[in-house]
Length: 470
Ligand SMILES: Cc1ncc(COP(=O)(O)O)c(C=O)c1O
Image (cartoon, rainbow, N blue to C red; front, side):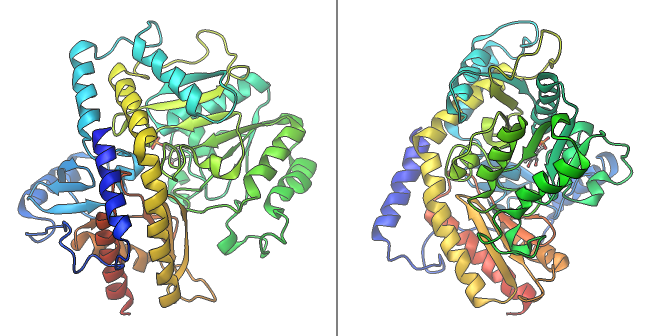
């Protein structure tokens, strides 16, 4: 908590003076430090070994070989220091190696590493379940199934929905990413590479268009569209293709992540909720990427005044230790012993890290994400006014996407140039990731302060100018 408060105090001080220039150029703020060519000599040794022995299926965009991290900074094996705007793909919510998280991990590791919540009890797992039941939106009476990852949380939700409803089918969205295990992959529809050669996937999944207003699949405009993308589910899918009484659940990301950091309009989630209520279909909210304070609220769905029946949580929940959770209304999680379980899941060390993470989020970091998110959004939005190739800026809190285009009218995606911007930023000491076909995502750890934010955005802008020759 001390670190979180410190961050907030520092942030407030800077905010107080706040006639701050939108640049860190003239300040004494800490900056990345790149002192070797990239990759450096020690990094090259690791890369060679990695290329020889590690699965080629991973999606590395640049050769960052990280040795240690603290807060929003990581140091590579050659001593180069980077500003991390990826947070280990949205995982280190409290920053790298937050001292209080590390402390509880050390304490727990000295007491009990593993016992298996499948067959035994231990305090941390029950305590964390109680806490998750409290913070997840909806009535307090909920139950939690623990897994080790986002995909496992989604697998649990898929099985639970079938079990509870005794219905076999699911509806998911184009652009969705719910994981890569077979069940979760059957819902995922964000890139063909993720599915290529893996068929047959789970049958009974129908994909419909997400509310991607910048590229509306119906060529309409919100709000006059009257959320046609949800009406389509009722008027076409459920009337002509899939009887509603066969559908167990609709899976949705309240802010679509891997698909391109797409924020749906205000009416989308409530319309989906109303549709699910009408046909007694479960609404499953995948908060794996958007949850745990990332969007400036504990869960992104809270921005839309909507409650789901089942929630999937992972990534930022335990500050870097593996943990996933599927949280459902108690009446929905009604399965019998033996119907679902996992040996490692809900590991006591991960649970300890999660309890401390939630404490830090509730005591300053969510607020910080909301406040700095607004600053980042405002600054990134000015890029759209200045550069034609910045097609769209969207996001909530510190989950922001900047979609780059070849032309503001045709909105032609520019995947290669997006990748070049990400690579150029890496060379300048900023770790970014892409999302979707043509978007750059900004997901720094939630401990970031204003000066670090501007240092990163300065580098991003320089990278943009260099790649687009602006
Ligand atoms: C929304 C969402 N759901 C599920 C997953 C899968 O999580 P994991 O990679 O931990 O299996 C991800 C991963 O990016 C995600 O963004």
